[in-house]
Length: 157
Image 1: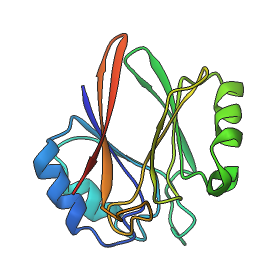
Image 2 (image 1 turned 90 degrees about the vertical axis):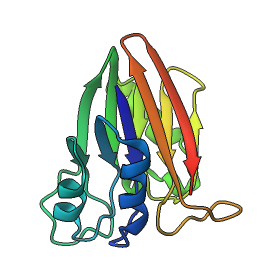
Image 3 (image 1 turned 120 degrees about the horizontal axis):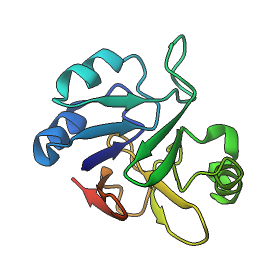
Image 4 (image 1 turned 30 degrees about the vertical axis):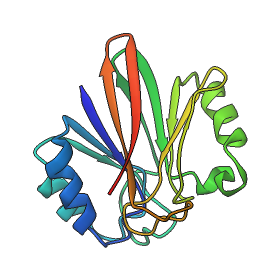
């Protein structure tokens, strides 16, 4: 299964549409800050789209968090702003471990991360619209899941 992980599109969706065409995923996971683009993001994809609420998603009915099963992995998806991710991923990783998760996916920082240390993998796709990492290139993650095998590739536009 090919999973496209994105975040922080902030209603600037052109790069998201480009990435959908490039990746052709089986599932899209958006880690929040869609700013009212829920319909556009889900309708553009030829696959299921899972979205969570970000700190800029005012008046939205999106869920604050999701728990998913992908292959053999338990995945927790949240925007991350309630778990101090701007100061590192230690708090969110501890929370994910306490919930019995294998992977936590989050956004908010606009910087891509694939952190495999410890019992929980922490994954942040960065931002397709307003990247903040060095070089400031829009980023996303392609996750390939086979039953017991998983691979994360950080990609840039």
